Amino acid sequence: MNTLPDNSFRLDPSANSSVTSLKVIVELPPSRLVALFGSPDPGDNYQVSGHYTFTNDRGEVFTVYESRSTSLYWKNEGVKAPTPEEFWRSNDLEEMGIGGRTDATEFTKWLVRQVGECRIAVYLDRVA
Image (cartoon, rainbow, N blue to C red; front, side, top):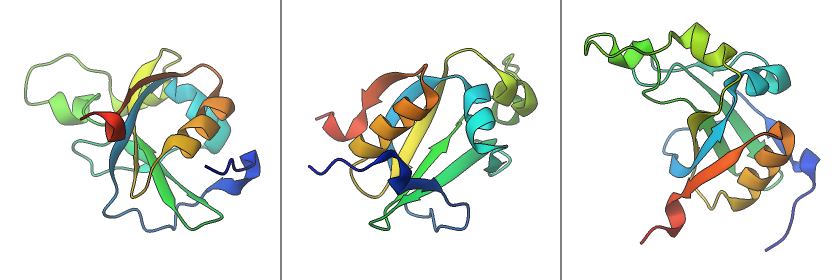
């Protein structure tokens, strides 16, 4: 597999991220994403409070997003959860998804290098 240089992935909010699916679950501090890439784009105001969309030189699209971790999702269930604002300010390792239409291994490696403090929880493409 070709290894892409760090600058081959870029934030691209205008990229079409429809029909992407969860590829990897990572744990990272959301505040680090905000420091690196600015505030996330709005989510669906229900399950997802925010997301980032990236592309590479091959035109592949990848997303990094929070899902079901904030009060947006849990407000009617009586579950104590951070507000979206609290979540995105958090310095704690929080579970986030990486979505894509293709293998996300190289993107995940790139993201880990950018964020620094990060833990890969599950590669879903590799789960039988």
